[in-house]
Image 1: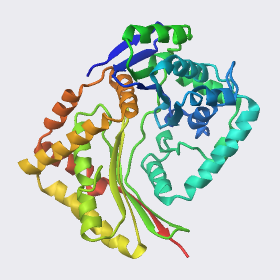
Image 2 (image 1 turned 45 degrees about the vertical axis):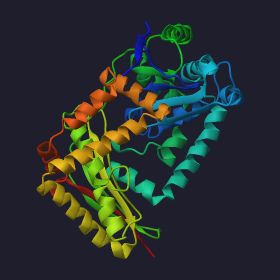
Image 3 (image 1 turned 90 degrees about the horizontal axis):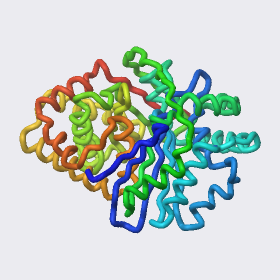
Image 4 (image 1 turned 45 degrees about the horizontal axis):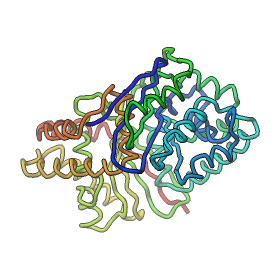
Length: 409
């Protein structure tokens, strides 16, 4: 893959992916997320992400929000369990304007008390809105089931109690402990000479004080499968089935990504969608997901349907999982699955913002970025026997947990 990397003396790295477009994209990825929060600090990483847009040493909220919007650019951010990301899309001439804003909000935000009060209310509303969406809530509750007692199970938004209790000291302590300069990537995708990108990043970020102290994430606790069922004031039944899965460095990661795509991944031709939605018309939405993280992963199947249809739907899901455990894919089936997955990966490259974020995360996690040919080679190297072995590990009924939301009167 055509990209270049430069490391500043403070440890911050810049990744440049050249393109011929007049539209540019940039991101700053910080290796800090909700799993890095201390006890009773649920939602702190997400709270900080919100406050980055409020006030800095030289800009107020309106100046921050207008800095890019006045030139037609788009600025946004998000938080995951392991990352915080700020990103922007803009016309080619506005790279310095965008990176200057990144530097300002990430390293010079002041987190004023009055803005904290307002943003707490915003997030409390976000939590309430989220709880009204059972298809979203059940997935987060399922992660809490998988990682019960561990901070990986925490809701990224936090709780009403934790959000209301946040202080400025909490914010400063989290940033000091987790915003390590050697675990920060600035990604740039655009029509620029790399030497000019380096010069600009050195100018804007070169004086940031290094922060490279060691940080240890809490080790995983033990997992035991559970089945839980709750009544909710909802119209349909919702269910999530799954378990802990492979971490991002596991040798079977690519094989499981392929298997998950066969089972219930992107597109209408997945086995679960064809069997349960198209053949029997039972569920409007049924999908499976596999998310690898630094030391573990999450596999889940989600479906929602009318309460009287759920038992049959679950039997059909179990049947599809059993097929994958018992029947090795034939050469044509495996070839078609690989071609579909490779095509989806290639099409994903057209989303250049998604691409530069993905590349930046890869550099952060692996220290390199694989070319498309290398990625395709890994997919093509997966064997049918490997897929069968993975299916028997990941879809073992004795290791699967299940969470159900049922309508209640």
